[in-house]
Length: 373
Image 1: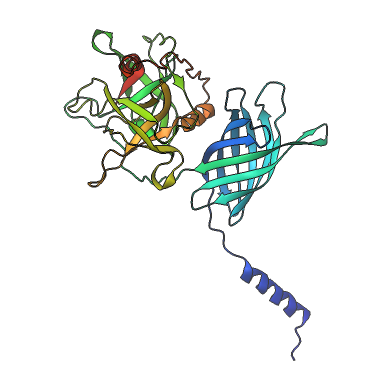
Image 2 (image 1 turned 90 degrees about the vertical axis):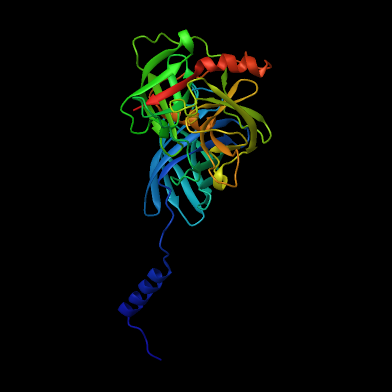
């Protein structure tokens, strides 16, 4: 039997090691959003995370806010990625989820599902005070990453015979003049104007984009016009809790307002068909209502006057009718919390229980016709 010399033994071991190393193919780069909660108390937080991956490690920034409102916490995070799991660790923290409290550092192994772009599981929480490590409640995660690939045709605004090149719809989310719409409505626009009201009460205001989320097709605008003096108290609620399958909902918008259907607001109603969108996309609802080009960016309300989503897409197929999608309001709230503006979301409940005709008449004053060029 031929013996290996020491240097050949080392070479053989190196060859064995490198022959068993598998190439890394998963990529966590991008925006993640969802929720985290304390496993024991049930306290829930809206969570968003942006990662940049190199090899099998990723670093980024995460933010969280208590679901019921409160201060914003921010962290640098580090992630080591394996085939079906990640090792997650907070690196440093600024801010606090509530005054006078200490945020628990999170570290441990989470499940990673690359096929559905999902990170979930429960890991340890701890705080270090004066050099002493103190146990905190375990923290559960449920985060999703949205891919860039569109699965349905998004309503696109177009016009014929006037100076504006397109239109969409929007909804006021702060009485100081902060407006939500779709990213694809205002993408590449050099000028944006939004109309509110009708007839002699109609007002047009110049707007500017303050923050966008391309992956979730969301944009937040600000009225930047000397004539604007505010909207007063908004009569609806920005609701982030999940709707239920079968809930009745309605959309308000301006379909093809500049190309034939006119600038009168249009109402369409239906139901929540599923709590996820195409390919089980968790960021959207599937709806059994009809929307058209120009509805993009408009509000989705339940029948108690709660804003629960932003319409953005529909299925275009000869064998599919009245299937559309709306981005859940939770993901709009995530974008709001990542912006540099202090935005006060509406909380009024005055529309609850009122006839739908009365709700539409009231809500129409806060749904804007977006014009772009």
